[in-house]
Image 1: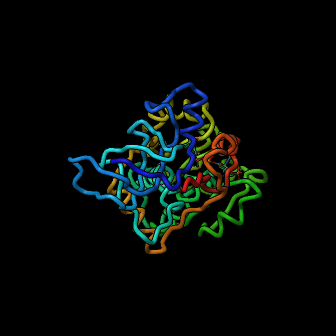
Image 2 (image 1 turned 135 degrees about the vertical axis):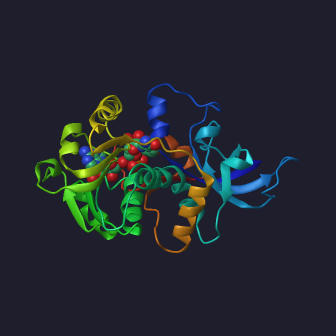
Image 3 (image 1 turned 180 degrees about the vertical axis):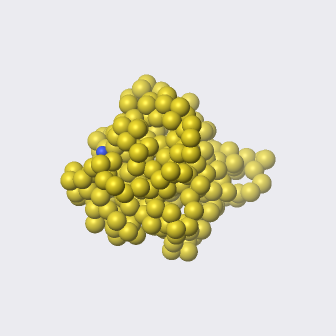
Length: 283
Ligand SMILES: NC(=O)c1ccc[n+]([C@@H]2O[C@H](COP(=O)([O-])OP(=O)(O)OC[C@H]3O[C@@H](n4cnc5c(N)ncnc54)[C@H](OP(=O)(O)O)[C@@H]3O)[C@@H](O)[C@H]2O)c1
């Protein structure tokens, strides 16, 4: 299908791949798109010209920082009319990551105490809202500028990491989702309840490597240390889109750029303090 892109969001996957020299197949970054079907090939069954669509093109060579992109039909879902193009672009990678970390790796259960470390960014703002949707008691960890935002997203408790080190408190959590920051992996383990689960989503590169190298080793015993590698999944994306339609979660949009300012958008996100999602509006 040929898609006319209306909005695309920026992800760590864009600037981190760029920094590492990992150039996507289409030589254009940008994964999370929303737009309109401009024309369809003869084997396309689920979409027609004019349909509003959204999805994550990371598995299909990226190409979203552009006015048009081609995509196979399995890459996209119909964008519900109640969701704006900006919201459609904000959703895929960040929200899927949060969902798969909490539900699939974290086995989140009603009533649990859940700690979201890095609650203020693209993934974190979805993680806080989704953890509340799963009816848990949520604590978010973020910097001073974002404590109000984290509580307004529903967190029951907020820890300002510039003032307090959660690894030194006596609180214990059933589930810790580590999205940002850099804490010793053993300190995370100590902060879990005896049968707690730690899920590493991201953070500093050293945090990611330590979790990958030692996480499985530290999983002997009742506490589990896991890493998530989010997978584009249309069923999950439809589930998340329905939560937005029903007003259960809401994408948090920090800044908006135009296509000619894509470099500025990438620079802003790579500085590590975006407050929600960064969007490039194309149409
Ligand atoms: N495993 C996967 O499948 C997967 C998928 C997507 C993303 N990721 C990874 O997840 C991470 C987050 O992605 P993102 O899109 O949410 O990034 P992002 O939007 O750029 O995250 C920015 C946020 O991180 C917070 N932050 C920075 N330093 C922090 C610290 N020391 N402690 C707590 N919060 C801190 C900032 O809040 P403050 O300004 O308050 O500090 C800011 O709100 C990245 O490392 C990314 O590579 C992994």
